[in-house]
Length: 398
Image (cartoon, rainbow, N blue to C red; front, side, top):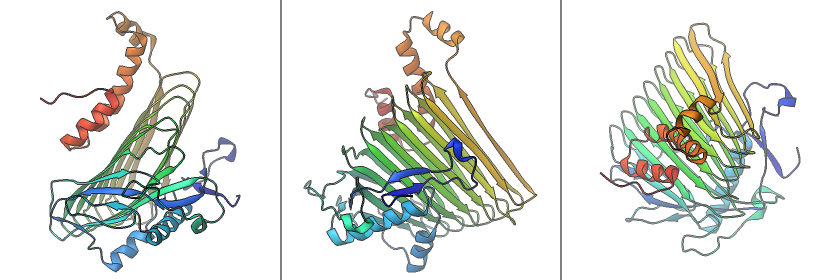
């Protein structure tokens, strides 16, 4: 491993090296700057309010992209604290230096979402260039603009967080967001991430969550465009009867490279997980999807399911899918699978006969694959925005 490369998205149990699926190697980058965050937070959700003890739990949580990415993010946080760049105030709500903390007090059930919009990578909040601190992570070659979000939901609370990453296109800067979530007993947290990149953009999303007794964590992700997209999520179902639900959709444009790693650790008894990904690959795109369910000794009565559905839009592309189950407990149920295919001649003939061109047919089928996940968002404003991004046109309100 060279000095300027980190290993991320590590498969929990290694497979044959020649498959090149065990992990992904990324350049660290030439420096670190604050990723700007514009906030719109409902009154019952606190900016800050996370105890030192809970913050320690968050910072020690496993993340999907792994230890080396977490260290790079921590280096960025240190750099951001020194530079003073980061969060844009809106409606009097703000946090500082590209690092934001959100929390819900015990028993608070806020139906309105907390909205985070990530903008202006490599720029300060006033639009000027942010300082780049190359010494924080050693000798490296590509710029990084990184934001960090810490979320804590106290017992019996509920909160929804929508992370809008559609405005962080920034040319030669790799943009990234790390989100760490603590869901305490009987609490519910839903995290929605929407990413839209331009042809040459690079982006990563790194998530780690710890879920308590009878608590629930839901994740909805939509990745559209970009040159290189890397994402990972690790969820520890520590409490008995805890639940994790995930829906991810992606569209890798021509020549794009996507790499994913999702890990669910079943620790408590009678825990449950349902991880579902679906996407579209275009000409010369490359995608690796790792999905792991880990039944740890003592998680008796737990159930886990993982699956991926991929639509291939061309012959010249690379698709790698790894549905993996690790089991150290007898009394569990696990299911995994993948569906990979292209449009059949029968479907093409049927739609052509109804006057659709091949271009329109492929666009229609790709959009349908993605829209199914948009319906899981549960917020009308965000669903409309996501639908317009997928369809490429303005959606008229009813």
